[in-house]
Image (cartoon, rainbow, N blue to C red; front, side):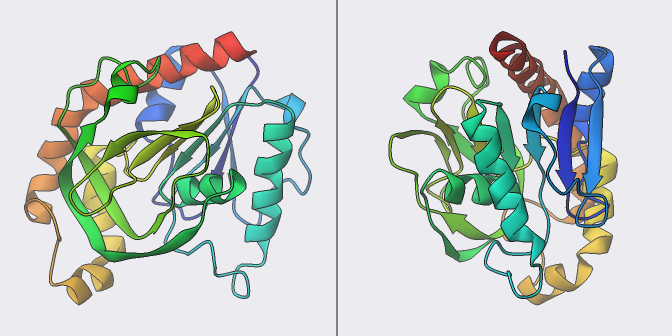
Length: 237
């Protein structure tokens, strides 16, 4: 398999469990640190898939982060070349806009461990199929997106109706974080401590002292998801 290209927007939000699964399968992940190490116009054919990770910025912060427009253009180039894409949190929002959706502020921030419900399309999906519902996952977002036309809604939560979608057969957007490890969850509580203070703590689930244990509970389901996603990438190659 050709390498995966992963766009990382902040050091603490890396590939996590996706990286673990890819390493077990002998799949290389090339990480582009945004914006400094972003290949200006990487040829999509050099990669088997594109992974767009999370970050604290908004897709609308073009004045502060001008490279977000370049990133959106890269997603569209990959779609033109039929390269599979996995967008996580911010990445899902960028993907949603590339597919014709719209990103806007949610009614409230969703931070912490909380359930998502998998819908009928998810149970029939080649990547989501087999995951339990409800599934406790890690959230950290204030923005959300409208569902792109002709896409399949796969998951929702009480606070966020659009938690995951599939566009066509190879473009997946996850508003939540399946990739998070126990170490990542603990680190985020420190890196984003100011935001936690602003919200008065997590808005769903227990306090940060419970996050590492929740991550370990999610791990087998998340690893199964990433194995199935890499299976799909292989089939698309």
